[in-house]
Image (tube, rainbow, N blue to C red):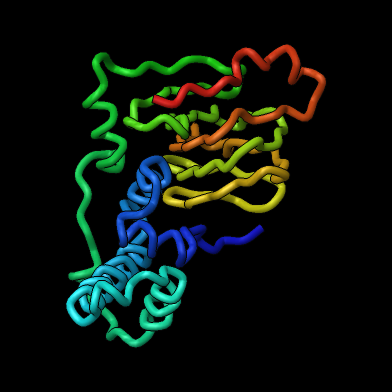
Length: 222
């Protein structure tokens, strides 16, 4: 199992910087940036590159988006290193600002609801209709059912840690799952784990219990 921090890809950060990333994945990237100094630094570089390209380029030459993406990525390493004071962003509160904003904006406070004996969910209002955005709480030492994915799932660890067959995921880690990624998350034994998730489609349980739990696994984008 790796100790390396799990971060968004360069392509995802470029889309986030350009403002072209969808709302729900953007919320997850924003939550990750709350914890990850390296990605905040990369984002500042991307923002600077974007500003330079906008100033120097004729808008008529920006039709080829693939070429623009390659240009931006190629120029990242050409920028000087930013000082720690400029790269560091202080965050208020226990949760990332994007999460607190959704909780505060809700007509009534969202509440935890039990999915299984080891897993609770708190659904959030994100103002889009493709992904369900929610907080998931894995109880200390709890196992979620093994499952596959019908669509893309973005997850950011906000508190504690969990593991699966591939790795250990700690506070701030950013994980993307695609259809065919079968796994069984298990919470750390020393405390609960809270994650932010953006789920494009319901998961599919691989056990025979999946049929019984199917009504509880529907997603509700809002």
